[in-house]
Image (tube, rainbow, N blue to C red; front, side):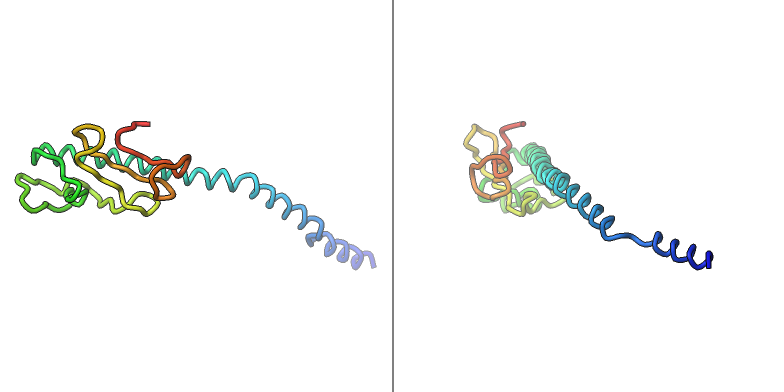
Length: 148
C-alpha cells in the first residue's frame, strides 16, 4: 500500500498546476509589455542611422562622379547617373555605387536635386517614416547638408 501512495504522490507533484501556469503567463506578459516597445524603437533608430549612412555614401559617389565628369548629375539625370552613364556625359567611369540604392529604409525613393538650394552642392533627402517633407522624430527629414 505504501508503494501505491508514493506513486500517487509522485504523479501529483510531476504536473504543473494552473496557478503556476498563470504566474508564468503573467511574467511573460509583463516582460513583453516592458521590453517590446524598447526593441521596436531600436529598429526605428536603425532605419534613421541607415538613411544617414546611405546619404553619406551617395555624397561620396557623387563626388567621384564629379571628379570624373567635371559636374554633378542634374536633377533630371538623378541618382541613376551613378549606376548608368547619362547620354552626352564624357569620362563617366561608373558605376559609382557598389550596391544599388533604390530607396530609403522606409521604401521611399531618395530625393535628389542639383543644383541644390544650399549653394553649388547637390541636395539628397529622405523624408523619414512618413515619406512627406517636414515632420518630427521618425517623420523628420534626413538631409545631406546636416551631419547630425
